[in-house]
Length: 515
Ligand code: NAD
Image 1 (cartoon, rainbow, N blue to C red):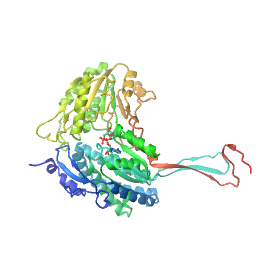
Image 2: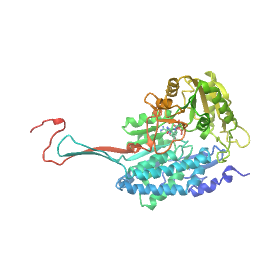
Image 3: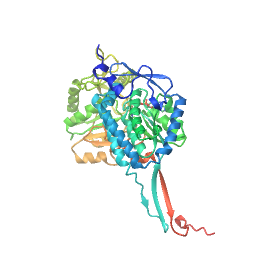
């Protein structure tokens, strides 16, 4: 029988990515920070075992941290533009491996092949961004209040950055952090999600060759695998910054633990994103934004559209267009480009999805498009579900909760102020959007009394952000920012310097202290 792995050349892709000993427990090769217990990685596409991975024991973690600390002393002394040049080479290498890495992302995580390639493209883009940034790590110069004094600020590397990533973006989120951290002069220790460990190993293999070629210590990029390393990172005083991407539940624990030791965090947690569909919206545009937002990546994006807040005058029309679109969705193997919706990550996620539908019904939700498990030939992994639409009220407990699955809650509004209040009326604050051709509504939505989210879009869905902007959200989404704009500042420590080039020592605020 021809398997999905055979049909789409997964074995060949793994080989190209340096992952061969799939049944003996692949480690990170020469980095060798993985001699602990073995975990298995299964594809949600077909349920097949892709590989076994050796995780990092406490001793392995310690070795990795020693390597990282040693490497930091050398790496921080390399001029930033030269570090940028090494990151540029990483981008070149990723271009070469875009196809096999994109395939592995798709097969191990279950997102569509197009999205798998898209993730690798995002890594390439962030490399380009970081190269430019390596010549722009600017500080300000201020005027001193004292004569013959000069005052300015400069940014120094912060040290070791711990990156803990979620399963749904197995490679891109790490690169958003690592590439910026590297040009800033930091070293990085990465713990990928244990649901997609092979993607982590593949990236480490690619980066390692570039570091080697440039005679740079391998500790600049360390990989530790397995759940045990999460709390080791949280509690490790040698790690100045922990960039955590994942659920609000685990993020709350990470936040407390790291704060207890006065470490810094970037927290990229759950979202509960809404699109407001105004009576002035172009419904054909809403259709693409809302359907891709709700069912793309099988609803497993932090920016997935979870709620549609629709003006009462266009409610019936919007629902009818959505029902029609949902009836045409093809569910199946994510590597097959004819399919729109792939699997959820595992059976645990399917259970959460089914329970959320039941909870919505119990609270009074009305099913508009029926969900459920998809079974039969081609769906043997047990991870495929039907995207569903439920008419609900914003205050339902289940609507206030992020369920990482293709469930879309729809609700009506009558005034724009009411719609904005509903959009803001959840604990999370990541991404938001309005579809309207009214300038007044658009400006109101973007004003200080508008959306309270980190991302607010007009005539674009909630899902999918560009690397050039600072990415992150407010409230229970954690408040972190990463990727573009001036997010790099979180990866450096700011130092204010004042130099007296006179012969007197005047004190600030005019204080007299005569001896
Ligand atoms: P998760 O919270 O279960 O796991 C995230 C990571 O934390 C994994 O690597 C996991 O192994 C690790 N972890 C588990 N226990 C830990 C501990 N005690 N200390 C440190 N790390 C620990 O999340 P998930 O299911 O992998 O991902 C889905 C969630 O991530 C969703 O809530 C989604 O919204 C969120 N997410 C947010 C963003 C964003 O940018 N805001 C992006 C992607 C995903």
